[in-house]
Image 1 (spheres, rainbow, N blue to C red):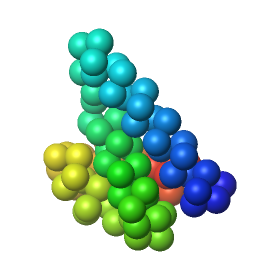
Image 2: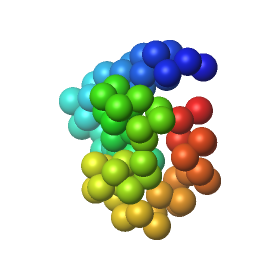
Image 3: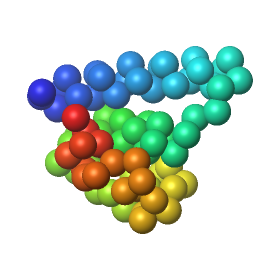
Image 4: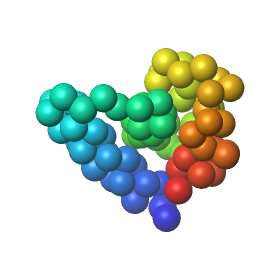
Length: 77
């Protein structure tokens, strides 16, 4: 998947997440990590994605990342 395709996929996910939140659904840590990754990929691309930045942006502890994803690669799939 190209970087543009990944950015478009994350943008769609971001819209879906916002719609869920608007309906009163709580977004979990995994979804917050995905949303943070989407924002970073949109500005820096996949190559610019750093896990520490993702966890900081999502307000999730760095070690907690691995409760949701096994690797950076799994996050961006």
